Length: 300
View 1 (cartoon, rainbow, N blue to C red):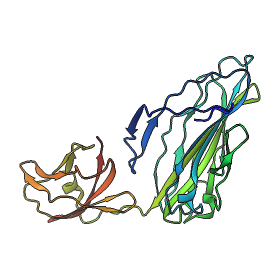
View 2: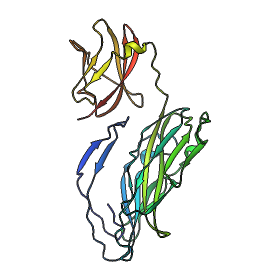
View 3: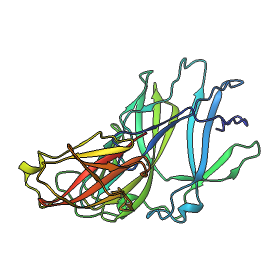
View 4: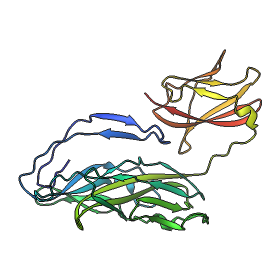
């Protein structure tokens, strides 16, 4: 972490927690720093991470670009306590083609300061200044999501926009499959004065909406999985007369993972999921009653 006063510090990760609702196995990593500034001023606090995921649709050469986050802190004794905004709305991972994507970042400021939101271009590192603070530049080849629109949903505002006052993000609608990167800044205001900024940089993966066919609603109500989240095994509870003909498991971007043949038990079928990394999966089942899809979260 670079503190914006020509100093930096490296600490070990304090904790790593999977986001329960995440469909991509997204984690919250917590690092704790303590730093004392020598005097009042405006400081840009910067984190530079390793390369982004390869193959991002709306930005060029992402595998060769660093991940660059920056927050602005105003240290002023006349302001009193100044705590940065917190975004309580954990980032959703998945959007579906031709379906409106809506997310509210749920910004909160413990000091009661006013918050405003704006879209920005994601940044990448372009080196350091004279005293060693990282310098950011716009990610090459970046295009906003308004360039990748699908069929308009008349029930929501058209296009891609972020509400300046509420922080609600609407993409109406995603029209191209793949992974996208977007960024926004939360501005913190007190008495009409800008006293801080926090940047959020996130990925979105656009997929086709899953379709479940061939299973009656009455039969589906007799099917359940447990435990879910699973750590080592997952039991699929089905009526005794049902035959399981084929199983396939995919992560949320459509990559297939091998899964051992399930074992029949008194409760149904038991799947060994030890070989699956933590994250969200779709279990595709072909049964004697038809086809269905079950959601699976692996968490350890």
